[in-house]
Amino acid sequence: MDKFAAKQVTSTTYKNFWEKTLKDNVFLNPLFLDFVCEKVEYWAGFKGEKILCICPIPTNLLGVAILVPFTYYIGPLWLKEYWDSPPFRRYATSQKIYHELIKNILISHKSINISFSNQNEDLRAFSWWNYGKNNLPKFNIEPRYTAKIYGLQSKTEPELISNFRSDD
Image 1 (tube, rainbow, N blue to C red):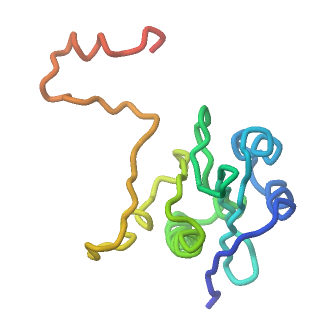
Image 2 (image 1 turned 90 degrees about the vertical axis):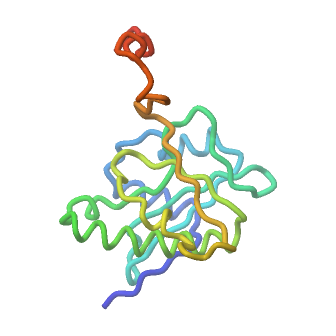
């Protein structure tokens, strides 16, 4: 059985990895990251010796992990073959890799900010982190871009419609 692991890799490794992905997100393009981020750390998730995922972690000049303003998604980038695998395999692989990434990134950072695309729909590795350990920190998972409506049960239909953007 292949062992899962995670470690920090170079920007050159990330650029080479980027070439093997679907390249469907401009926010993960190495040129874009170099342009908008003061500094970026690249953390790779391995299955055996093979990199399956790299997660860019933007930091400020002090090395504190930050969420870059005006970006929709800076988070894990997966190899194309990951997306081609059956759903049950993707789930098992992602949970093991996310666990290793979390464990290793939190050695270097007190906290991390990751923004997932809608393709990464299963975040249980983050919601289960330190589950049942009341004295240890947990992740705060919050949707950034959604159709979330506060006070839904108390709003009338005209109130709901009035909250839609005019171009919807």
